[in-house]
Amino acid sequence: MGMDPKNPVSLLVPLIGIALILAAVWLTGGARRARIDRALVLARLSEDLPDFAAAEIVIDADAATALAAGANGSFALVFAAGDKVVVRALERRELRRVKVAGDLLEIDTSAFTHGRFALALPGAAAAWARRLAAPERVA
Amino acid sequence: MTLEPQLANPVELAIPAFIVLVLLEITVAKRRRKAAYELRDTAASLAMGLGNLAIGLAAGAVAYLALNGVYQFRLASLGYAWWSFILILFAEDLTYYWFHRLSHRCRFWWAAHVNHHSSQHYNLSTALRQTWTGGLFDWVLWLPLALIGFPPALIVFQKGVSLVYQFWIHTETIGRLPRWVEAVMNTPSHHRVHHATNPRYLDRNYAGIFIIWDRLFGSFVAEAPEDPCRYGIVKNIGSFNPLRIALHEWVAIAQDVTAAANWRERLIYLLGQPGRCFDFSRQTTDEIRAAWRARGLAVSAPADHFRAGT
Image (tube, rainbow over all chains, first blue to last red; front, side, top):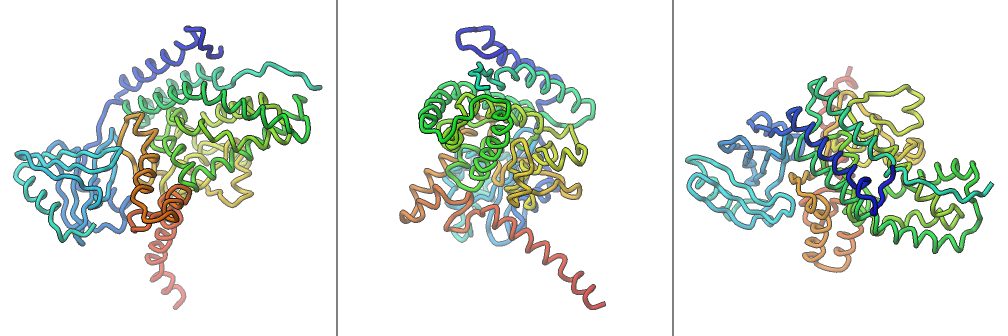
């Protein structure tokens, strides 16, 4: 059966298929998120940014995002995207705004794909914001 | 025999089979306790597939008109004889190989193709994560087939056959196939390599149906059990928004071209190798592989030296 724009039944096939597939993924436990820990951060940094030597790592309260400070003053973000993890070198030219709201550290970057990060860092948000904003930071 | 057959669209015919096979893979993965599918990733892939289908209806019409235009100046009339179907199978697959290679080595083409690689999962739904922008211009590479004398309907038919073939190789459910199959055909193992970001696998195995082109043109790498594939792109996007998936590299090109210092830089940002830059903020796949090899040599150097001394 081919897809014919004039035949609504043929157009329904992909839509019903999509619904069935998503239902099957959900029913088999597909709605999950990666939980970030120190070992995972180090492993992924060594794979994706092999030249980045992490000197300090902070992981937010819900284990969704981590911020790593490099030995040379650079920074990297490691964050969950579904059940996978994404690593970003935090380039200075990409950094738009760093804001602290209570225990929340908000990082706004110019990245089109995933530009905003909010890390719950009880007691540490302000200190990390200062470090990110420090002028001597090397990108 | 030069019949003018009414050739079906293989992709449209295959849609029900695609659905059944994805459902089957989900079931097999669950039984094997493998986390093959994630909800938002799958939804994004399916949305990309649906968008590609919709855009393809319009873009396909333009492509078909162009193929017909060029066909008027054909060098030969190959028609629909049985051997034409054999010839187009290889001729289209060779065209696909070079299209695919260009799509990884030139940023303008990569911008349209990158979305297919943007999932960090590798399953049958990844096969459906198709381009939204490539159909607007990628057909120009198939025009020479019409100039040679393949009927446009036959070219479009074979493109569909190739796309349907490439669906089933997007899976981790199938390991290695018999040696003769792995030697000639593009297989799940070969295509896993193509989707991997491990330095040794980057920009390798461009084949559509036959892996022979990669072996012939020096772009073949076999899957190595000691280096399991990590899927995605060098800078993973971390987004499931179909618009961002479809357009992110175009936006990145626009940002780079806007910020470029001169026309030479602008041209390189547009047509150079993906990752090429002038501020050392990112690397091309060649540079990534060279750095990986250098690190490997640095690690192995003392042992080699020891062996040489004994």
